[in-house]
Amino acid sequence: QVQLAESGGGLVQAGDSLRLSCAASGRTASAYTIGWFRQAPGQEREFVAVLNRGGGSTDYADSVQGRFTISRDNAKNTVYLQINSLKFEDTAVYYCAAGPYTTRSKSLYTYWGQGTQVTVSS
Image (cartoon, rainbow, N blue to C red; front, side, top):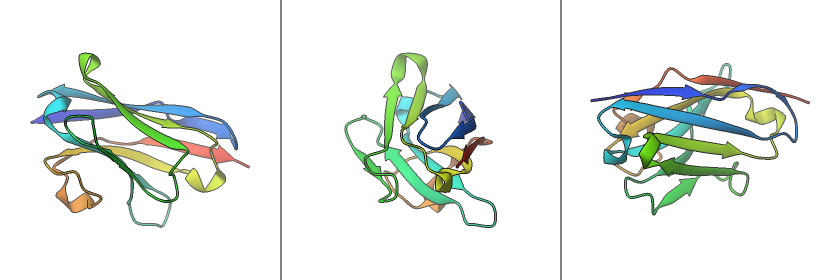
């Protein structure tokens, strides 16, 4: 079992950058694929990015491709989501999740964090 805790969110202006962190405790995060999802008010939780267990394979939603980068620091048991050129429509609660598969499907992730709020002002 693994516990996940997101941090790094905040109130920023359009065009700014943020780095979100997903810290794992319990079992090592490197044993799992880690995905990032986000949920805006009134909308369903949507896939953002995923990094496989080995760290050699990534996938991004079309809406964030080229602006978001997912990475892993196994020594710190932490996965990061670097967000550049933030847009108003990036406003959402961002969640990290751990699971056995490298997938965009949120139903296939076993463990979830509590989320961190990102608010982008225009």
